[in-house]
Amino acid sequence: MPPRTRTLLGVATAVALVGTIGSLYFSLGLGLVPCELCWYQRILLYPLTVVLGVATVENRPQVIRTVLPLSGLGVGVAAYHVVLQLRPAIGATCSVGGGCSSILYPMAGGLLTIPRLSLIAFVLVTGLSVSVWMVREDR
Image 1: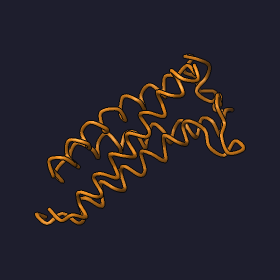
Image 2 (image 1 turned 180 degrees about the vertical axis):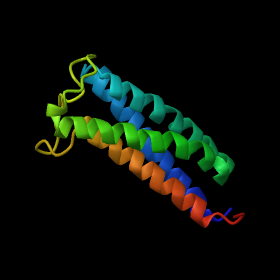
Image 3 (image 1 turned 90 degrees about the vertical axis):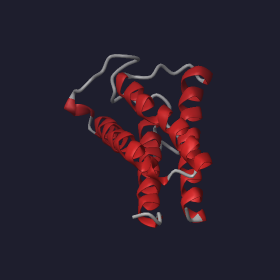
Image 4 (image 1 turned 90 degrees about the horizontal axis):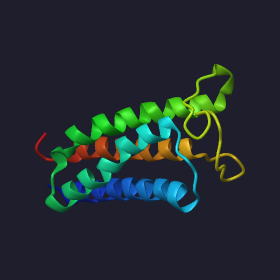
């Protein structure tokens, strides 16, 4: 495997790890109650940390077959969550800790919200995984 592939897997692992630690900090450190959509995003993100970490250590670029479905679904759920925050008039709620359109912890003057951070993480992991597929030797 080219060294670039292992680097891409390592960066994807780091992104997933930061997302995992960040989500735990928001709930355990700050006491924010995750909404239902946040739970779905966590369910999709947490395994990526382990799967990508093992793939990085074991030099397994084929892991993208596992990563892409998880990260792709994560992009979809996070994007939907961001839309709910941008358009609360849609009226969708998930009732756990308030509606899914509520913004519990705005950052950077409201530009960054927890669902937007999740979307960024899933897009990065997906993009890095596609890059792994594009540079691997055994295509």
